Length: 168
Image (cartoon, rainbow, N blue to C red; front, side, top):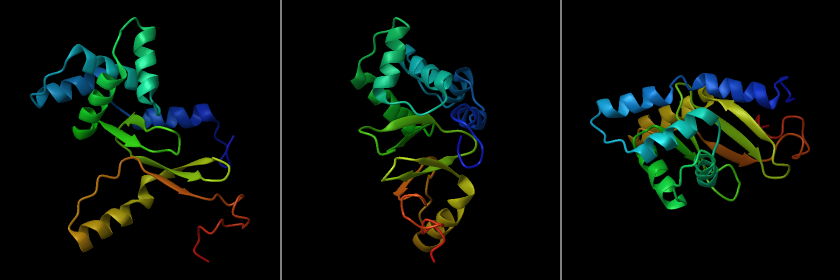
């Protein structure tokens, strides 16, 4: 359990709840935009929908292989990059050896990742809204911040009660 009393399954259910779209809904939305959907693209979308959490290219390839479908890593990667460009999938570096991918939900979420102990803290999107506003106003840049990881040190590893998060 984390400091708020959530265990890993609670967190996963919360993330899945934020993703209100099924594979069929995503496929229909893309088709309505005139997009051609191959069987491989649909299978990758379904794999992402079924898991509902962060997956690597290798995770998706393994899930498809377990279903008896052979799709190589390069094809899975290209499909994920295409889905990212379409605004369906986010790609995030969570400090592992490779990127993770997740469906973009109705409610974006973000992570604070401790460089010392590896703790991952979920962060509500409202903390990113002021940053988005500043980028629009001062730079004329419309950011797409749907799944961000911010690296630093948690309050336990930094040695302070606030972990330096309050700026004091």
